[in-house]
Amino acid sequence: LRHMESLFGHQKNLTLPLLNQVEWHLGWHDEALLAYCQQNGIQLQAYSPLGGGGTSTGHNGGIALDDPVVRRIAARHNVSTAQTALRWSLDRGVAVVTSTTNPAHMQSDLAVLNFSL
Image (tube, rainbow, N blue to C red; front, side):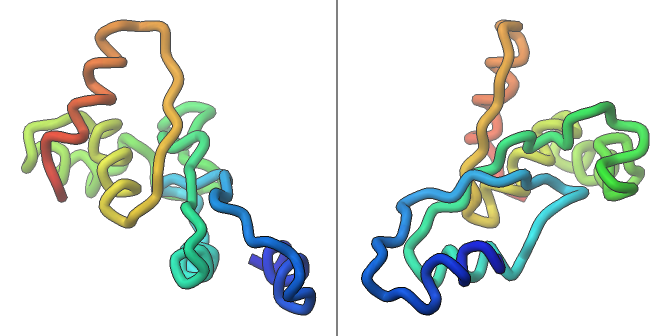
């Protein structure tokens, strides 16, 4: 957020971006940045929306895909924990970037459009 504010807060002659791509997932997200982007018509886009680097500890000790709460929510909706994490971001208005060459993962990623949390 401080980077966005320093670029655009004092210099009103700069054009705001349409999109801001940042790391965003269950274990690492900046609600103030999301609010700033929403207030200024900037789409927030998540890279690494599943947390990257393994699931047993989460990024910087944050919530991981194998967290019991995430598992319960996924089970309640009959979806995977990865789908739950992606849908959580989408429900907050955050676009997600996923990357896979596995057709099953591609289908699973697209299936997040078929439910809400």
